[in-house]
Image 1 (cartoon, helix red, strand yellow):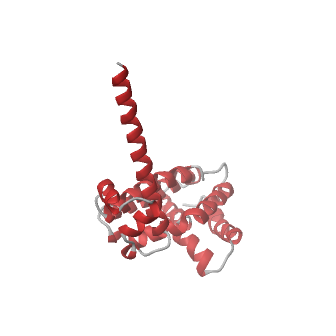
Image 2: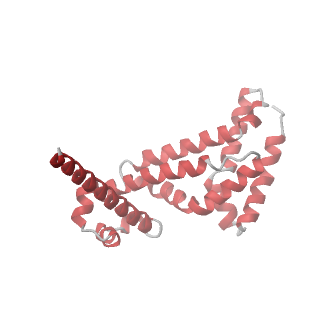
Image 3: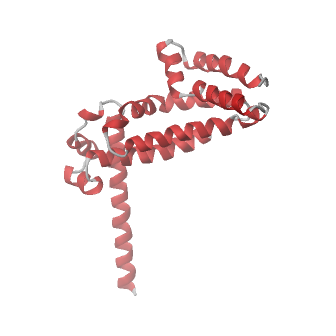
Length: 201
């Protein structure tokens, strides 16, 4: 019995160590991906940053494409949790949290959309992220859409909300327009609130 318990303990310890190594490799990939074009990232650089061998990376993820897909998969789960927490008790509160969310994650999200086609499996993950954005907008502003009874008008209103709350809109205001984070939040509020207050179909 003791031998069986010891074997189970060793197996658990090895599995936990392997999981930690896998997460460290993903962390290394994420750090590189944030600053380096995907086609210039080498597995050698990932392995060096994670302090493992290239063979360890290949054994765990297969290819660079597989590693990117695993990295995106993990980050999308984390981002979804952060995004869910961005729904406030008021539109103003929701926008405040949304801008803070984009300040932390917006650049990475936009890079994912721009480079998604470079790795198999990643376009589907990017599409899932886009779908989540639409669902989030629908749920976050549901009570403001209820007052629009005409179906076509409600569809149009939701599309407007989706566009205003999109990471691309944040980027245009924040970087192309040269606004601060606070000014970006104010600009989004000026676009969104009149839309939510309007009940006209």
